[in-house]
Structures are given as C-alpha cells and as structure tokens.
Amino acid sequence: MRAMTKVTRKWRKSRDGDDDDFSLPTLDDTRPIDSREQEELVRSLERSHAQQSLVWKSVFAVFMFGFAAFLVYSIFQQASSPWELRYHAYFMEEVDSWMIIFADWIAVLACSMTIIGLLHNSKYHRRCIWYSCFAGIILAVFWLYYMLRLPKFRWDVIWLPFGPVGGAGICLYVDHLLDESSEEVRKLRSYMEIRNNCDKTNKEGRNIYFISTSSGC
Image (cartoon, rainbow, N blue to C red; front, side, top):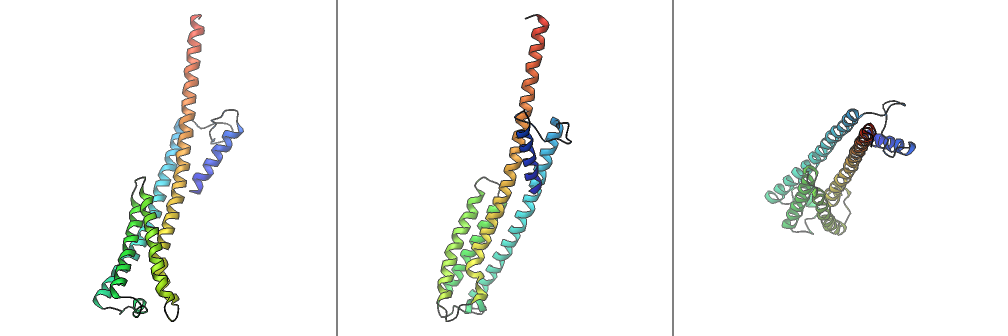
C-alpha cells in the first residue's frame, strides 16, 4: 500500500510540475515511460494490491472464524453442562441459561457476517461488516449491563462485551485501508488511459495536418 501511495504522489507531482497536464512518472529524469511500461506498472500494482488484500482479509477472517468456533464451543458447554465454564458461571445469579446461549449465538452471527463481508467481493460487502458492528454493540450493552450488576466487576471477561464489536471494528478499518489502496491503483489506471487517449488524439491530429498540407489544402 505504501508503494502505491508513493507512486501516486510521484505521478501527481510529475503532472503538476510539467506543462502537459497529463505528465507521467518517469523511469529516469529525462524520458517519460511509454504505453507498454505504463501498462506493466499499473498491472504490477494491481497484482500487488490483490495479493495484499487477499492475505490481510484471509488473516482477519481466520481470526474471526477461530473466535466464532470458540463461541460455538461455549454454547455447547452451556447447553450440556450449564454454568461449568467460569466466564458463564459469573452470571449464574443474574441471567438465565438460555439468555447466555442466545447471546453467544448472536456473537457467532456477528462474526459470520464479518467473515462474509471480508471475503465477499461485491460492492455491498461492507454492509455485512457494519451489520456485524451493530450486532456487536447490542451484545456489548447486554454484557456490560449484567457485568455492572455483579458484586465485583470481572475484567477477565471483558472480551464478552467487546470481542465481537472490536473484531468487526478492526476488520472494518482493514477493509477501509485496502479500499483506499485500491482507489489509488484505479486513479493510476485512469491517468494512464487519459494520457494514452491524449497521445492518440495528438497523433491523429498531426497525421491529418500532414495529409492536408501534402495535398495543398
């Protein structure tokens, strides 16, 4: 992502410093890169971004999947042996067992929506992460309400209210950074296409002028 941002800044600087409004970055200080080199540069950045995006999204998707799997285990334990897990036993006097199970299922759903939002490539994928954030906020309110009712606040279970919403928030931030990087690459391709179109138009204009002068028009 840093490399793409650096190239974009160089491109813009080169545009602002020359008389041509669509100047391109150069391989050296004297020669602008040609169309083939421009295409190779942009394709290289596109491949790099695609690889980075896949790696980072996969890393956080695996993290969220692991958290969801842990929650499923907690649900199974609470259903088969109620209050056996310490972080559930804290709430034995405050919450019914079915409410604990229901809250954990909501957390699993929130994690699943985050994973879908990370790995889905549609333009609406971010909505899934936002829905996950909203579900996480509801869970945070639920757990904090009952944690504050305990005789002693239990810091060792702070992940119960903030785990799902924190994970969704981090994934949303990562997706935002990758989207910004993708936008920089799209701008580079747009600059390249504009430059190529301008060169083509100028070349056609010179050819027409040459033909006209040659024919005596």
